[in-house]
Every structure is written in structure tokens, then in C-alpha cells.
Image (cartoon, rainbow over all chains, first blue to last red):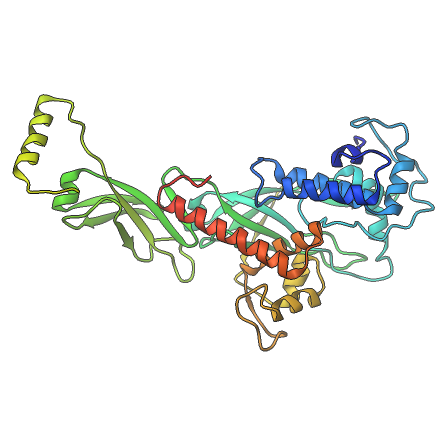
Length: 306
Length: 101
């Protein structure tokens, strides 16, 4: 297990005041907020910042951390001393450990035992945990199966808490939509003294798709048309996530027009709609014949574009 | 060893379940429901109320903002309103085939 330098994580000195720690934490919380940060690993960074703040903003935990961490460098192999925890009373984890991988091994070893022994006299249900998963749009139409790696706290014979990796294969039902949650019963944090485990909540996000866009339960696709198809009307086999559908393009269709295929969006309850955004693609005037045709249209069609 | 587990879509959730999932007291949920901060409609009764499952995302966002920035509930609701509005506008841009980022 690697030693973590919480001061470096927050970018403060070892003599920082509580006000300086709070200020540094807020700056980083804003920077790595999952809803605004453009960084790909913003969630992981936010977890690290939360963990550092949970220790350094709590005078008891900070004192204990300073004591046990004397002489350690970041990344150096670390084991807490055998009598670790004696003389300190921690009032809980101090931050939301509910997200998967919410606390590091380092944090769990130092403070996990204390937070779990708080409940030693009661049987209690474990906390619910959360994760965000990325699924293909196809999962919304057909359902899917996905592996999820959980980090589950385990208390060893010596009372120390470690995080064990636990892989589950979840069956995702069809009809899911972005922002919705799935509940996986009994896969949250373990209960206390024989109490039931909490549930795992999975927040659904769709992976970007090369062909389709999703807005709530509605699905959008762009349908390129030749000018004569749009002008004269036609029937086209259009691929959708639920299979190919024959679509009638009305005569005199304009670019940007939306055609709605009712009920062909995400099969939620009620189902969403599937929209085709018409895009008229002009053939290039790159041959003598093509130029002749364009010239004939310019001459023969009474068409004012402006 | 891999376990295969079925999961259920959270279509509806009551205030107690919402509180449990957000690691807050039920009182935290109830005060924000009564203030109209979690859902547009203000409920008449709370105990048997069933909320749309999508409220879970909003509640977790609000809780994180209140915790991280010592924000009051109204301010966190305002921030989440704006996050949701921006997300909606980006979805509409993408739906129209336009770049959103």
C-alpha cells in the first residue's frame, strides 16, 4: 500500500490553517466537479481530493495522519503500526464513501476500522453505493450484460480494513434512459453485525454513437438525401437501433426537416420517438454532364432561393 | 469469481429510499421537497409519496454542492437547475447534429 500525501493532493503546506485547507478544497472541488470538468479522470481526482479533505479538515484525523505519516514520502510503501488507532477517536469517514472506489486502500486502512466500529452494538444495514456506467445505445433497445468491478471493504483478523476487488455481471434491462438509475440489490456496502448489505445504484450514461443521438427517450439520426429524392419523394430503408424500417420521404422535403417515427425511440414506458433529420447532399458539378444538368435546372426552373 | 445479477430500473422512489441512497437523513429530503427544490411540484403529503427515479440524480448533485461548497439548499438547487439546463441544451444541439462541446 502506497503512502498518500494529502497535503500535496490539496496543494497546501503541512502548516496550512483550516481556512487555507477549506479554500484549497473548494478550488479543486470546482475544478474537478464531474458536471463541469473536461478532464477524463475528473471523478477519480475528485475522490482523491474528497479523501484528502476528509482527513485534513478534521483536526483528529489530521493529527493522527501527521503522526503516523512522519518520515514517509508519497508513493512509499506504507503499513500502519500494529497499535494504530489507539488514542484517537474518529467520528466517521467524514466524506461520502458511497461511490465505488470512494476511498483508497490507504484511507480504509487508517480510518475504515474506526468508522465501522462505531456501529458495534447495533445491527445495521450497509450504506448504498453509487457508480456511473457507460452503455451502448443498443443496451436500451435490447438489454445488455456488463461487468462491474466493485471495491468492497473487508475487515481482517487484526481488525484492519482492506479493499477487495469483486466483479459482478449485471443484466441491464431494456428501456433504460440517460440519467436513470439501476438498483442492484445487496451489492452496496456490507451491513454491520449481520445487518443486510446496502444496494448499488448505477447511473446510466450512453456512449457516444457514430449514427444516433439521444435526447431523453427520443433518438435522432441524420438521413442524407439526394436532391431528387427530396424533391420527388421516395421510400428508403433506414437503419434504426431496433432494425431497418422503410420510411416514406414526402415530395418537396427540405433539408433540416424532421420526420418522426412514433414509438421507435427508446422502448421505455411510454416509448420515445425516433427522429430523422433530413440532410440534402448536392452532387458535385465535377463533370461536363453534371454541369449541363445544373445549367438546365438554372435555366428551366423558376426558382428563387433568396 | 463473477456473479450474474439482475438489476431493476429505478422508476419510482420514496423519500426514505431517496435519503438512504443519498446518505442523508429523511429530513434533508423532506425539507427540500417541501421547498420545491427537488421536484417542481410541492407535495401535500410526504410519507407515501412516490418520486420519479430521475430525482435521484438531482438529489445527489444537490447534496454534493451543499457539502463541497457549504452552499445553502436554494443555491445548490439553482446550480443544479443550470447544470440540467446546460445538459438539455447540449442534448438538443447534438440531436440537431451540431457540436455541443
